[in-house]
Length: 291
Ligand code: OGA
Ligand code: MN
Image (cartoon, rainbow, N blue to C red; front, side):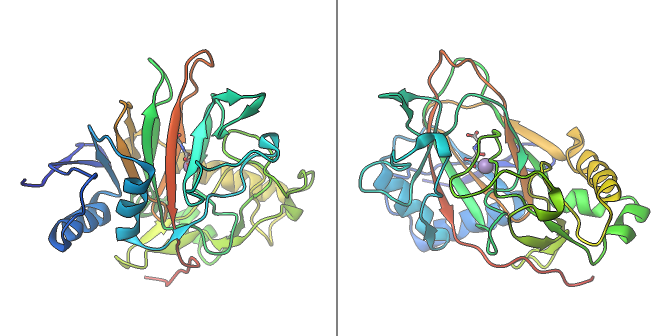
């Protein structure tokens, strides 16, 4: 079966055709997917019918998997993974026996980078759709190489060499995360510090590296100045020219390079079910080498 790569025509993203992820991929095919991922940042592979074991096997072609993150406080003792697959995280609005079976509910998930509140954020995530709502719940992506390259000079020189504090207390849907205290003062936001510009370890290209707007803070600045700068840089980074959105069908698999894209998700009707299984691939500590 010939593998075909079909770019979206937008600022990022491509569809890969001709793969059946129930089967092992040969090294050549894996190489094609890796190169396409590096070039297009987000890949979609449609019309799949895979198990968690298939999802894990495919994901492991790209690196070591990280166990599913702790999840939301409201999940209380409920496992955040399907039985036997602690490396698979469930993203869902479905409630069973009074508790969510997964994270993020049905609300909008605001623009974010996955797990940037830890020291070594994941390099990528792979999301597979088992059930999707009839409308809503689209996932959007934004190209942070482009955001970096088009930054106005003044903003670039102000941010050059600075770090940002990445909040771990709230997830992208605004739910508190297990194990973090509520933030009342952004200068004390709990979470990792990362450079605002990041050199991509595979391509060597610089990208803008943002986590979540909420509770973010640029150490060394007074809060008002940090807020104004962050508002400006976020408005720049998420302009529609840098984005592409995916309308889901059951059997779609999407993978994003978490080092050079932001993503978000639309809200959807809570009367509908959305069930996604996700793996997360270990990454490195972000660094920046001045070009
Ligand atoms: C995620 C995420 C978006 C979606 O899994 O990290 O942001 O569309 N999901 O479910
Ligand atoms: Mn996410």
